[in-house]
Length: 183
Image 1: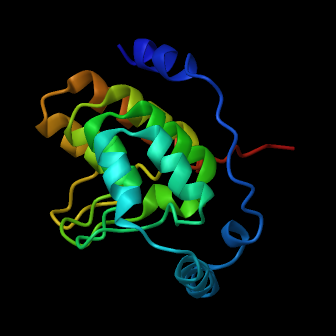
Image 2 (image 1 turned 180 degrees about the horizontal axis):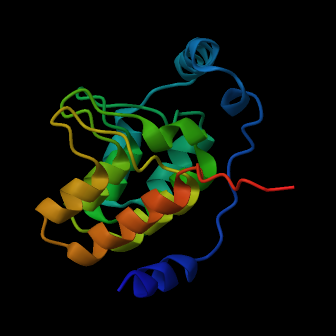
């Protein structure tokens, strides 16, 4: 079961990521204000959100090329990635992963405290979950109700997706088993 999910995840086209060199290397207290300033300097647009909701990749690309921020949020703090993930718009998700700053992966909304991975998992969007996990989305962020994406997949009665997310949680955790060598 998990193998079939891994196969599905690895079969998608490789994605080149936005060349964010500075932000991921900075510690959180410094990283956040710089990211906020960067976001404020870009133009925000309800059109970015609308394009993601509708799955309109052409509109999304056009707005982005005009300087509108892919980090635009709606009144509930949801990004285009939240909507693309929720509605299963794989092309939108792929474009956002490739073009937006990596911080978009773990941005939480203000209503439920959920990331795009939470949204995808609760709506049984398996391929989108695979894309987000492959891009580095956190598997352990808990929403305001205390749910991880895996718990939301279980709640949505998608045991195969929940098993895949659990396997990825174990895979992404650092190995704390240290070997003791005897001289």
